[in-house]
Length: 361
Ligand SMILES: *Cc1c(COP(=O)(O)O)cnc(C)c1O
Image (tube, rainbow, N blue to C red; front, side, top):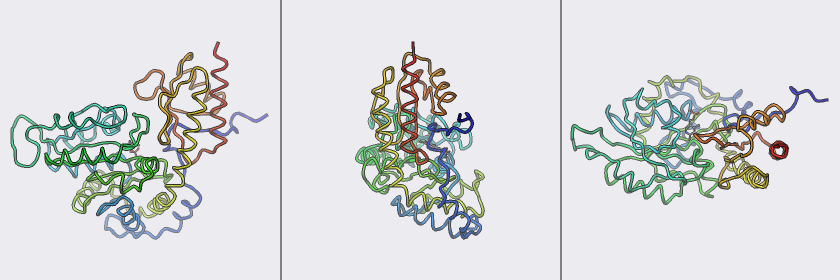
């Protein structure tokens, strides 16, 4: 009999659980390093150069996390206290980053609705811009609107990729008011693969972008922020102030280089398996997939059993972990497909859900 402990755990809680590959570990052990705060780590410099190329921007900086990447970008865009950013109500930067922009940087968030496709209504954005946006106007009643932040792919809206034309239209509308556009592209690689476009196209309309290397791309740590040279210099300052001055970070950057090289192949596989998973789930009684996944995140509704029971049975009887009660919904589950999951793992998850749902009285 196989003991419970020996059973393989299929961890679908998030794509952040991916572990560095053997190639990454070897690259770490060989990485040429220096002091990154002095700008002297050759491997970090190589990653930043490559990041700028891949993201199609003038410059790039390697930071510790997506949260730091977004916050440092906000700080760099909003050089005066009392600045305001317009952000969607279902975005990570608004929901899950502790309000760091306001608590740490004196930035005021103005929230507009995210539509189900992850976009913000451009009209609503334009109406939310304060009369004293831009440089000169100085009406003392208002904060100054400086930036709009979007998310791509949009996690809470089902891992959807934002259409490139939408991003461009939003950008040209807000540019007329002197605002900049930031893209929280934690999973922008997934957007690129889903849209069949290079990453540089996906973030072309944005002034700045942050891309997580530590999610589906499989690196253990790290995020790239890209934009204009002057902007990236300000992000570097903010990064240091936020405690992100890491020294011989080349041991980590070495994994980022591999993550970028293997991105397309890895994420394509993830998306294919996610689609298969969703299709099979949808045939199980009591399970409903409201929308077929475009990328690696599969959202489904469960009925006839409480989510706690469902998740607990999956975990304790089958060794399958996922995020139950995702967002604010009472019956929604999120499963993240990622590079450490095989076709067999997905098959095991489908079988487990099937068994549980069959046994509901
Ligand atoms: C994970 C995530 C982040 C934050 O990344 P961390 O590296 O966990 O700080 C930001 N935005 C989105 C959309 C994310 O999914």
